[in-house]
Length: 138
Image 1 (tube, rainbow, N blue to C red):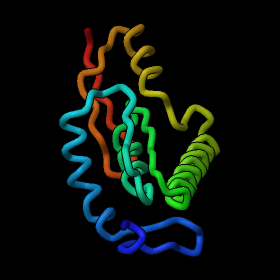
Image 2 (image 1 turned 90 degrees about the horizontal axis):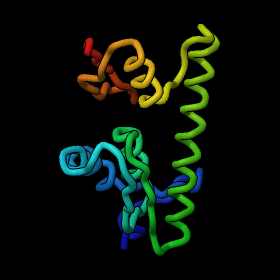
Image 3 (image 1 turned 180 degrees about the horizontal axis):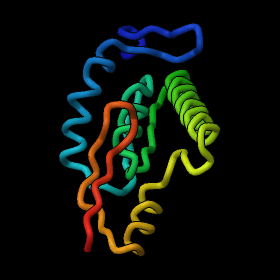
């Protein structure tokens, strides 16, 4: 059914305008109801647009997409690989400016802060696939 309303791009990824429109409102619900950490099985992942968007926005969760259609599973895999390459390039760019910079594991940052007398008070999602972490003294 999805293929009737979507389009396959030259790169092999399927794209659906309705998936693009709905990803923000669905994310709002998921951010409210899901735990901060855990495993989420997405059933009928379709194009992969949703799972990639959700994984970027909710990094404490491990996402497991699924779909009965082999062509759509390939679309999901292509999107996931594309996102991994983008993250790796971003990390390399940051580290080339300063070796101390780069992508960090939020838990590792929290552990270091905890050992120095701070506790994570708030994690604020920022619009460019990053976070502002607010620490306070214990």
